[in-house]
Image (cartoon, rainbow, N blue to C red; front, top):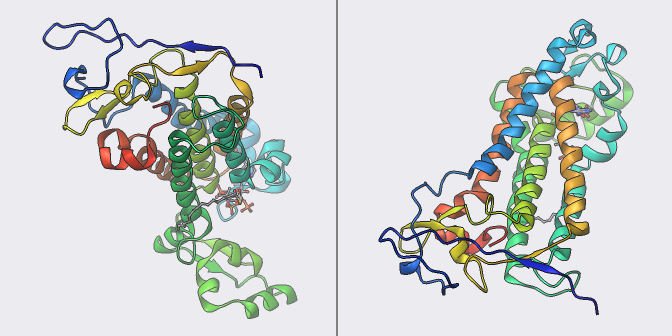
Length: 342
Ligand SMILES: CCCCCCCCCCCCCCCC(=O)SCCNC(=O)CCNC(=O)[C@H](O)C(C)(C)COP(=O)(O)O
Ligand SMILES: Nc1ncnc2c1ncn2[C@@H]1O[C@H](COP(=O)(O)O)[C@@H](OP(=O)(O)O)[C@H]1O
């Protein structure tokens, strides 16, 4: 059987505060590992740059809609969160566009496929394409389950209507059904429970009503940021040959002190097997993350108000922070979900 070529990455161990240096890999003894000054609650410089792409994309989209004459002349309809179909300023401004229907609308399927292709095929998590449960694979799955639970709660179901629909109601929105009195709309209304009538956007649309009056967090912005940020933060630490996203991350250890994440890397502190080729898993995740970026830009340019997009970003960032950053500062939470590449 062919074996994969690997590169061993040595992480330079800087001098300890008392001036000692170590030229051999040392066992992960906390007392001997260097302390780090920065807070474990904060992302590294590279992570900050990666995260800044998201608000940057929302700003760029708003700029496109403000400068594009076709957008400026089109009529924006707040109850559909879109421009009037007959005046759509671009193919991507139509809800029926191919990428919306077959990529975003079933976005969690693509994110899930890309995630598990990566987890099953990348050698940093376990033997590629072999059904072996490793701690890294289990913890990656735990991260996926938590992020998926947030996606379900925000967009699909949260002990009844999802959070997006509940927050719409809390901010004064309602289902306006006055203006559709067709036979099918009347039949739909008769079939529905009182709770459905009052609460869900999907049910409101199905009876020909208009979801109007409240704050409608952008589900597209939320889903596209949540899914793609999860993929980036999973595969970047595993493929980077530099310490930008891996060892430069700071964690709080059991003794309450802050150190480099390298000390929790198994086998040898600071060392990790890094395959030379990207492989299908990383390529798949890159493809889904790239498509998500493009659709995020299109959503930013043609749909929703800026505040609805901003709240979509905020909710997605809260979930990403809880799963990918908070564990660094909270050892008990790190035991459950781990850290990618560690
Ligand atoms: C409340 C907590 C629940 C706890 C449940 C535990 C979770 C365990 C996870 C188990 C694995 C789930 C596997 C999921 C596999 C799938 O992906 S199947 C369904 C795929 N569906 C989608 O991809 C739909 C994506 N679309 C949307 O979310 C919305 O359409 C939208 C993009 C947000 C936009 O909504 P609009 O209505 O168009 O505004
Ligand atoms: N990039 C995009 N391309 C096409 N339609 C988009 C879109 N972003 C948002 N929309 C549409 O705008 C509406 C609000 O989206 P959301 O709240 O999920 O951000 C949804 O309409 P429908 O619910 O009528 O399909 C959604 O399909």
